[in-house]
Each structure stands twice: as structure tokens, then as C-alpha cells.
Length: 323
Image (cartoon, rainbow, N blue to C red; front, side, top):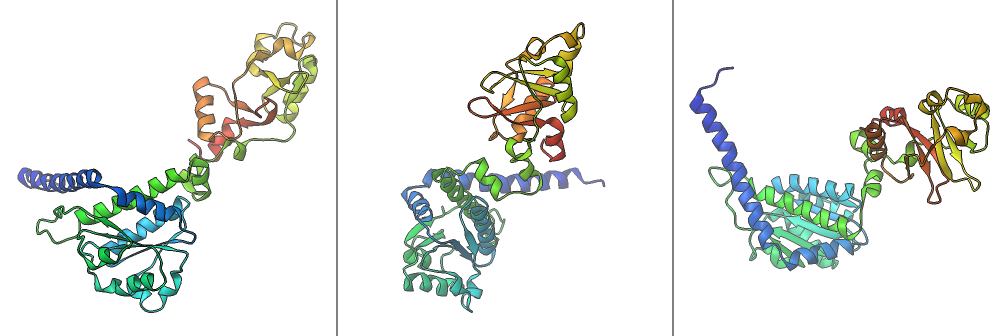
């Protein structure tokens, strides 16, 4: 489709103006972030029940995303629509919860009942608005003030900059809470078991084979070693020392390099010592990277005392969607 050059330039300029306006506001907000933010994180950290997020209109849409982010990072959270709250859903909000209410103006009438509910039952209330003198922030136990930044809308009316600021604040609270709780990749995987993200967060323990491992002793004859490799169809055999620790590995490449008189040798004479290994708690993505980098097809999985716990094949990772 052919477009007029001036028209194209005008559209690009509008997009850049919006992004620049919102980026400037975010930088301003970051500079202004103060003790109230730390207080909010502390309140969320001490929440015995759930984090309840509420807001009307565009703030409500942002609130749903913020609640989902909390929930997916290990902090039980739920969005409660303020209008529905006035018609029975206030029963979802308990004294064990902490409530976050979002409103750019801080004067949204539909929020009155949920604010009153927090006061009635002494439920911690974190208010987010752009006007410190607003009803919401005056009633809040912790007031998070959005900077007075212009909306990116040319008429200054459509919620644009303000919703971006609120969304970023929600992300900042969630990440700060994650760090306080030492919420890492292993925890994250519990809440994201499906899809590409779930595959990326699988651990070696999730995919390794731990039964009938192809293991031989250093003094075992190569005839027994070949039988072990064939029985498990693994293409490798691990060689263990007197106390069961892995001391070497035998691969197809080792067999070819020692083809002359192979059957007269012992496993210890043919093995490659100190092979590349991995621990069971490592991410499968890390194991796959190691195998691709070293151009090998399998890794033995070892305990802290270097005893074999399992074996992981590159095809196990690929079948699970790890990349």
C-alpha cells in the first residue's frame, strides 16, 4: 500500500512523541520514588491473606494486570471490581488482606465502598493517585503519588501516561517483593508450568533418566562395558571409582580411538577422565547450552559427592521444548 511521505512522517512523529512523553514521565517517577514505596513493599510482604487490587475504568484494566503479576510471582492476589464490590464482592476482602486502590484523580466515586470497607475492618490500604489531597490518598494508610505528568493524548484527556505510570509502579512493587522474598527461577517455574516459559524453567532433575544407569567400574572389561552401553541404548557409559564417584566417561568416540585391541582393555584404560557433568538443580536450558557448546549428546548428573544420579540426553531437552 502506497503512503504519502508526509503522512508517514506525521504518524511516526506521533508515535515517537507518545513514547517520549511517557518515558520522560517514568524517569520523573523513578527519581521521585521515596519511603512510601518501601512502606508499601513492607505491607505487601506482611500480608497474611491476599493482595486485593481495585480500580475503575482504565485503572481497573491496569489493576487486573498488576494482580496477575503478583499472583504469577508467588504473591496471592486478586482483582476486585469496585462496582461489584458494592454489590456483594466486598466479602472477598478480608482482614488478612492488603488492598491496593488505583485512581488517577483519587476521587472516583465507585471506590467509596471499598475504601470504607478497609477502614471498617482495619485492612491496610495502599492508595495510588496523582493528587496528594484527593480523598483516596487522604484515606490511604500508604499513599503512592503519581507525578503530575502530561497525558500523551493530544487533548490531555485519554488515560495514557497515567496508566503507564501505574502499570510500571505495579511492576516495581512486584519485583521488589520478589527480591525481598528471594523468589527465584525455581519458584517462578511452579506458577508457569506450561508453554515456552515453562520449558525454559525445567530443571535437569525434571528430565534426567535415573533408572538403570550405564555404569561400570574402572577395572571392568570392555566387553562388559559394551554390554552396559547397548543395554541402556545410551551411547555412553560412566566409569566409577571405588567409592562410587564418577571418574570418567566412555563414548562412541573413545571406542573408535581405542579400536585396536579394544576388547583386551579395561574401562579405565579407554575412558575420558573428568568428564563434563551437571547438578540436578541446574536449568535444563543450561544443560542444553553446555551440550551444544561442547558438541556432546549427553551429560551425567551428579550429587555433591560426585556420585551419578542420572543421565540427561540432548533429545530429552529438545522433546520438552527446551531451547
